[in-house]
Length: 138
Image (tube, rainbow, N blue to C red; front, side):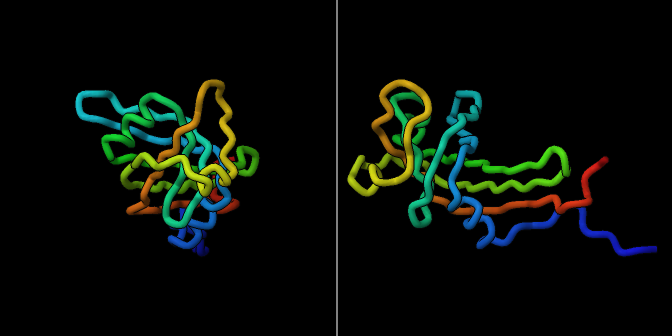
């Protein structure tokens, strides 16, 4: 019998925040009473313990105005090596003022249209998993 590496390993909270601080494209999960849950691709930036998203009118801003719960999923994968990681941040989505601090964040809208509003996911829980090299099916 030989020792095998675990199939997945939990990421520490610090490692989760390190990966989040790199920003990127993530999926923002939204739900509201009486509506089906939806996922929206977003780019985001970290501001302290807030994940900031620039948006316009629509479901994301509506969710933030109601201060409903939301989740953000960020992941990275290597399809060739069968490795990857994911981080999930959960909390309350809130509308934020469009101030100089938020305008200075590296958040340039990708989609066309007026994206002059900011929302923040106030992270209450963060967790992550990684599949180490050599563990995927080949």
